Length: 431
Image (cartoon, rainbow, N blue to C red; front, side, top):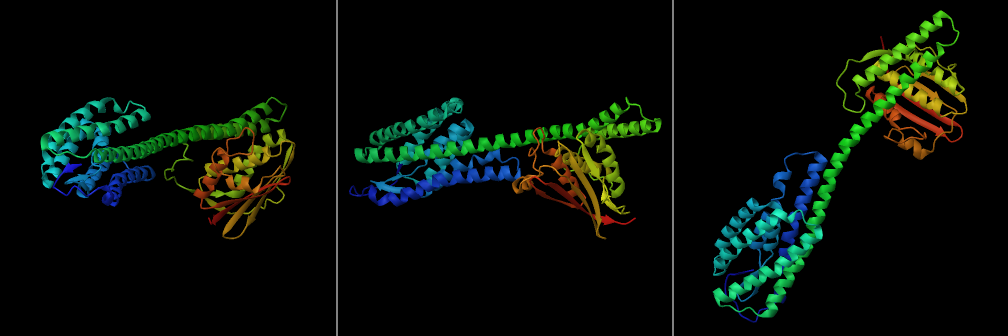
């Protein structure tokens, strides 16, 4: 509130309610702008916004409030410029505080009037006081910060009216003084609650960004562990078979398979690109029939342990190829075969078939396990979603990603109590 020109005593506050509401909107508007930009920074991952965006609130609010004040009594105008001024210094520090003070005095000088001399005394002193408080302000609890700001308002208004009375010889009626104090206190309380809410949201967004980064690291660690476990389990199974009395040629085959799976584990650890955007690698033509047979050969020990029969009667020997990375395709098949076997802990049949449609080829992998509900099917491929007691859900996520990278698609059909069928459809390439 400042003195700018004389008016008749009879005019009262009822005529300025609309102007005060508009003025209060000028205080709230920058708050929403600040929140909007921080949300933009979070969603678009933009950098270098945080250092300057907080300046929008006090600067824009002060300019708008001083440009459109509410005329109230005897040449006085009331606005809410002190709210952004106080908050700007307490949250922005003393350097920003002196900038706000200079800006306010420059704008106020253009309005003229005797009240400028009062502002020239009050605001430098207020800036120094708030700069001292700003050093400890952010360490206070939220309730303490709100209480401090609400208490500052009546103290500042009391000092202002004392100076107006002593320096300008103008006596403002008590009911006008109390009305101004009440309006400013109410406005400060509302703004503080909103501002602290915005700050809390922004802190949560920053914490969420950190949590997402940690989650990615967690996914990578868990997925590497999950994918390496498969070849190590296979290698261990074939090595255990070497203790049995088997022909020499079988021993050589088992050793070759075990070494090959250990090599695959090493490659997964050193060059794991499934979850991140992979670097471009040279694709190759993959013989689907041969890769299915290799994956079946690898999974057979696990199937035998679970008394699961692998049915290849419908696996037609189609001499067709698809384009992709062979090792990742093997990884995908192994994940699905392993899930099918583990879905039948009490035994069953894993049926693998191959259907050729000239331009595409379809691999069908059907088990006779417990099956899944429609809701569970829709969630397949999500990290950490699994129907297994000790599963992570990462194997299926890997498989979906691999098929997508090969420009294919994977669909799932299931019926509870009867089993599940995974259908992989891939475009055919010709040699």
